Length: 170
Image (cartoon, rainbow, N blue to C red; front, side, top):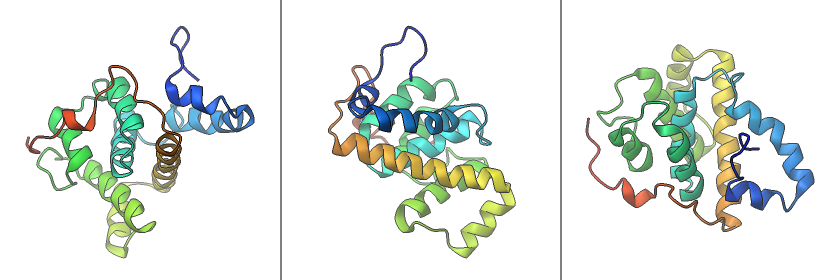
């Protein structure tokens, strides 16, 4: 579940206590983090960080900030916004990125999209991207629920929510 030579993170060590579940999950996890996902890596990470932050899952949020935030070019203001802010924060200038945040928020809050958000999302994302977006949110809700409820300890050196408390600016 990790690249060669990298020891497994705490979540994977926890999941390994139920090997049939872990085996069943691994294919879907590879899809969600792989190249076949129709969203870009940056878009994927926007959705994951927002979903984990909204679920208050500091563990998984921290793992993704640690491993992917720099690779996808997030600024501190964008990480702060994904953690504590909104799609209206000035650090989000691309409409497509704002929509990803709005959809993640709506799914978290209501398990649905209002008609106006549905239309706005359809204007910017194709059907494959929408389906990937919906299931990516759901997958990281499940991961967040499992990590929090199983009391997975935070990874050494991973960022913490408190490290991004400041104002949300450009």
